[in-house]
Length: 173
Image (tube, rainbow, N blue to C red; front, top):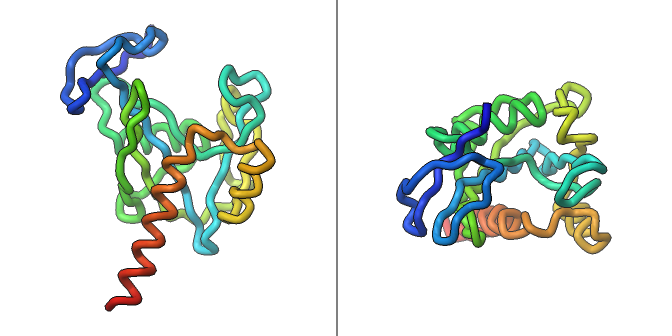
């Protein structure tokens, strides 16, 4: 059975639906989610793509994927987290950071506070080969080394800006 996704106009209004495998028509967009798990040590949970992945093989990035038809951004966040890592995000430990726009999708960025042991993860065998916790410094080194997925940097920058804003706010209070 084909996977169906909703398509939205540039004002993020529902316009139509299509099969996921079909190209997104000009002027329409799908909804994607980037899920950044952060632990109490301030490290981010990264996952490594398979060597056989069509895009960015063997590279490291955050959890994420596309919303299916009728799914909210939060629903997609939960489904993708469960599918890829076996983690069920808790809404009261999660923050929608914002959205950035790519040519054919709206990307919703989620920050999820979660302390989980790497050994307890259930990696999706047809998508994820490895997982690890990494600091911002380690992620920046991975960027320099070319082992971090470059197309997710806008989401990471949104996360970093969020934490910078918290620091500024706390100094002014």
